[in-house]
Length: 311
Image 1: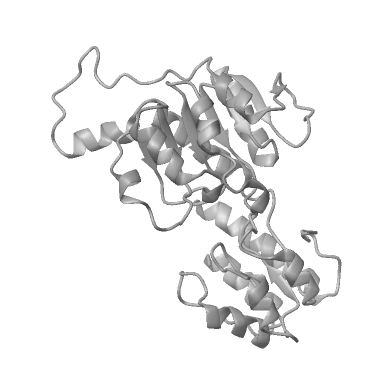
Image 2 (image 1 turned 180 degrees about the horizontal axis):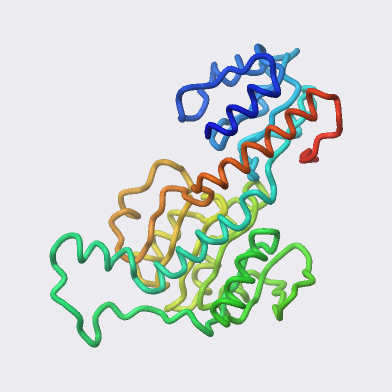
């Protein structure tokens, strides 16, 4: 954790145990954490499944203060049954994640990753009129899958920064400060957009939401961007679509079996691959941590939890 977050935790609690590894908790560590601590601050990858909670019938832990807004790695319903509440950090990650979406849109559309590789491997021969022609983003049509905080922040950047037409697919229409059309059908959104950005929460309801059917509806020049959760896209279907040049390209910050990246995906030139950088800025990670600490402080004081997740 960033130093400010650790300091805030040590100020709030009499005893703080800091895990020195930055890899996900192992199976035995997950169970030990529920039995040995009053509260835990888990991160992405710490898989608190129903089976984990079932193995600790009387947990000492009463709060999982998740470090991050996404919580599909925690079975919240099972946690609640075990007497454990779960919180997250909404808001702290919105702008940083939207910025990464724009980074991927530009990199994919303008073939920036491919271009950098060309320069680095010494095969660039200089400027040419038809060299690496990409997609011009200004004025294009963007389709956003999910119009929550992050989706709206992406849409605002696209509209005000690039003059793009906005369409979206969401559970309900949104009252937005710019013109945007809601699409009731995901295939219709895919067929209309020059760039489609995935910004929905992870979980069973959105697993493989973007599959062969949706990919086949996209325009041949269109780009697919994912800053949500990896398994929202059926990765094998995306690899096939990219390999066949069925779509123009893709930009990914998350992966279905993260951190494993299929060799077939890594070998493709028409995809930009980032190592889950969505919130990777010090001030953002500090804000996430301090928001989690606020939930922990409220728990310690027996006050209402600011960011309680209700399944």
